Amino acid sequence: MTDTRDISNLLGRAGFTLLTVDTDEVKVGYPSMWELIEDLQDMGESNAVIGRRTRINPDTLAAASAIYKELHGNEDGSIPATFQIIYMIGWKPADSQPKPLERGSGKVNLKDVL
Image 1 (tube, rainbow, N blue to C red):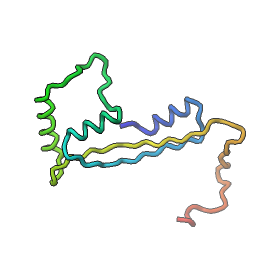
Image 2: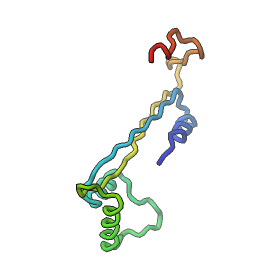
Image 3: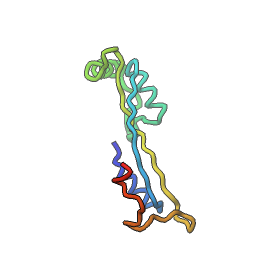
Image 4: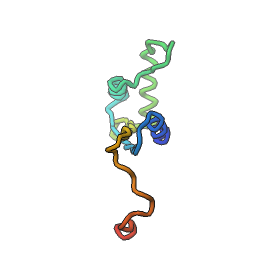
């Protein structure tokens, strides 16, 4: 999984300011590993290793499907997959950019609000 601090650092090095990075985890159930693989491929999450094999033996895939279902399968026969969605916001420096207030300049105590 990607660390949000790494993303913040990259955005900062790219010149963005007032950064906000947030993540969500979405759990999805699939009927089988085959639908999961299809969704991963549609997301561009294929093997990007240079010099990789272009084809996997179908028996290997069938064995992987059975093992995954046995180890991680749900009672209804579906298999779970968890996806991390990362949201990133940054401002390009400009004169009109909002400026953060000085520390301690707030007029309402957060303890009173919560």
